[in-house]
Image (cartoon, rainbow, N blue to C red):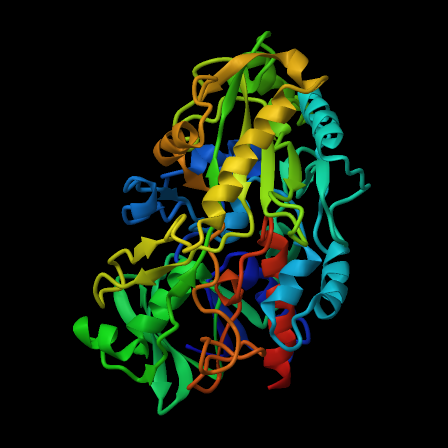
Length: 508
């Protein structure tokens, strides 16, 4: 089998790339995805994303022990299907803060460069303000605005600070990801093909040029040639792992795993980031929570009207704040959910409660991804290095966010819903007591990024045009190329990266 461009990974970036590169009809485009079509009924149900955790549509990663939070190991769900994690996230549509892109410090990627691409994507991506948000979500927004003192109509398109009901990628009560908006319509084109259920083992090179990939198809290892080149959009975990299996990475580490080093690129897999989050919960004075979201009346309401709790994205309201007035942009996000978020959402709610997730959205800590072996089926070793930054700014931001969540919880009208703080509980008042609880409960917001960051050849993996340094006709376009993680929810930023990548590739 041959093609002009071969795309590895069918998540958000892969869907956008496939649509863009096939649009002119000039190129034969092949998209390869390790998972299958998004057939689970829980994909379409907005509140059903946690039902996909640890199932067949999930890569089901976990971290190495995080030594700065009591050796806690954190679950990392990632979508293993066409549409990728866009088909199992909380659906929040967000561009990112202008400071995110200006801080990248990469030529051609400042806010003024990326803003027009975001504006164009607004006409392509389907999103709306959550029409099924719990009444308490509006009360949370009101209380947060009283506390923070900021009132802006939208959080997208400009610098933001304050609170809002979430904008979510739904239509008529059903998830509508980039799989629906970009890939499915493009699949009608005769020059676009898709292979599912096939994991790519390695990139095939002739000298420095990427000529295709080797992958397992129907139990047989096969090679596919791509005359125009190969684009990795497999995400911040699998893209660096595939580079390393193909001989691109730290030469010493590769040789230790029996891999011949083709390109010594020491930053592959390094600089990994995610947003750490802890989720305090507050028992309610009433039973109007989503503990009973799966009751028969709610199931019937969703089945026949596509309304009610199951039509909600769960993270119904968001607030952004600065832990210090000296910061130029928010470093804390609060996420309101009208249920008890229990054990990383791996357990159903046990009590009637509301939750306020506290996330550090401008983390300074960095981790890395390493190969366990050269075997493509061995899961990479994943270490976010949570709270490992030398000056402790991430820890300070998290503690500041916890105290902000408590202030909002004590502010009317939101406070009128609450009976008491269920966890960590009012006995945890000191920083030390709060930190002990955080170490027991911390997770991430499932936003891994930065493991193949862009920049100059001495300090990065890909160029500003997303070409892999030291190779020819090999590009990366996914969250791994971000120099720093965006403040908030990165799915739309990944779509922006892919849209720009398509232009770079077609012009190369």
